[in-house]
Image (cartoon, rainbow, N blue to C red; front, side, top):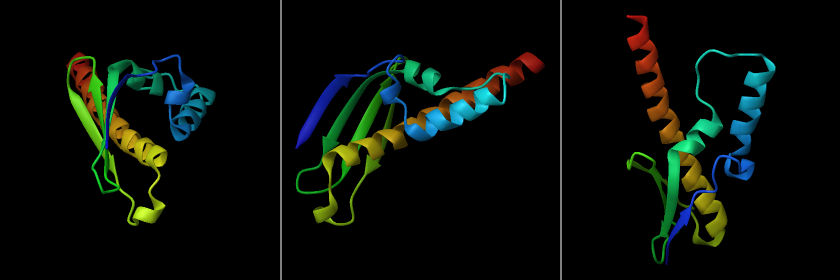
Length: 119
């Protein structure tokens, strides 16, 4: 059983950005797409801490990311077979799923701001 609170590595730590996000960001920059948008760095800037919990006797791992405004998002992962469970992989998957929720929330917020300015 694990319950840890660790500070998020921060925006300068490229290792904290998933590889697929890095590739997409590079493609966007290469095409010179400069309209208002979100970036992996912006997502990292919203995160102030992360905590993980693996339920005893299971493969269910939960990641809770706390955002700078105090809101929290969670992501989860679970292996179908206990023999395939790897704690590091479980944490990574859970964290990526929690980050996906931040993208949605921040995307909505940006769209709302753009819409308000267009009125």
